[in-house]
Length: 173
Length: 173
DNA sequence: TTATCCCTTCCTAACGGTCGTTAGTTAATA
DNA sequence: TATTAACTAACGACCGTTAGGAAGGGATAA
Image 1: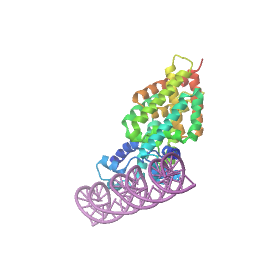
Image 2 (image 1 turned 180 degrees about the vertical axis):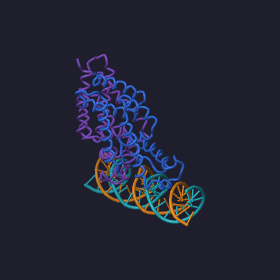
Image 3 (image 1 turned 90 degrees about the horizontal axis):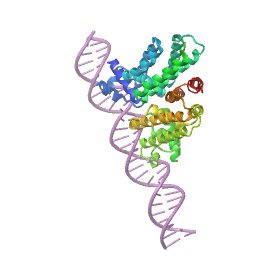
């Protein structure tokens, strides 16, 4: 049940944001009454905190276990359309509620650092490894943005063009 | 006064989103009582609509009057830190309220198209003009994201790296 | 010039509704 | 028997919004 609530909350937070989502909506989606939520979470803030932390950890693990740079990029495409928790991670990073703003910004920074580390690890040593890492995060962010309010089609186009340029710039060898 | 309200609303909507901003906050920032807003706007929705439309039009004009691709990129950096209306345009595009979602998505798409048109106009004819246009919007979006929740410093780094790669890929001639 | 009227813009008071939350109870489980 | 997780009822706070009135300015007519 605790997990069910978390999932329902995740997809609602992802779509309407923290302020735009009410406990009434969440409980209705789960199929229980509003006060029942308090048997599992002591406040709306704490519920959101749990949801976000889960989302963040899961996404962080995914990056750290990635084996190929292109596959990682490509995975964002279906992840966005399939995984509410991931969408929640995205939306919360783009638009964090006030009471968690600082922590979320800190964690998103850690996320970008993890991406850069991954690039430096997987890419053949090159003189411009630093550029390659920055450029990779640029592509990731732009892909995420496009996923948020563009079409799937445009996202795929972006991925294709970006990867072609990226390869050409950093993987000539 | 109508203009004053709009500005106050813009900076609050930019920071807290539509759902996260109350008319009480707006009126307090302006220095009037909450119901006085209704002398100028007939509802919170209409107020937001005006603010967003202003923000969008202003930003669209800016793009259409741009003369250099690099300058346009660079302008986003200070624009974000100086112009609440621009921040509101950004935040609203990233996280539109439900009642305007469709229109906002449509307009953001128009915005990206305007960017692509600008690239094709300003760039020397090349065989991969289409790629250059897509890549430019990638850079813009990633820059905007970084501005939203990164540091100014990181944004500048991104701009520098992205532009170097961009020039090298599309402006060799 | 003065008096009248209208219109705009602010105000106070209050509305119904929804918010997050708490208290207190009941039913089931271990 | 003690604990957990669901419920109903209700709380105070805040939400967007409306009603109704006061103050001021501008135009018009005496």
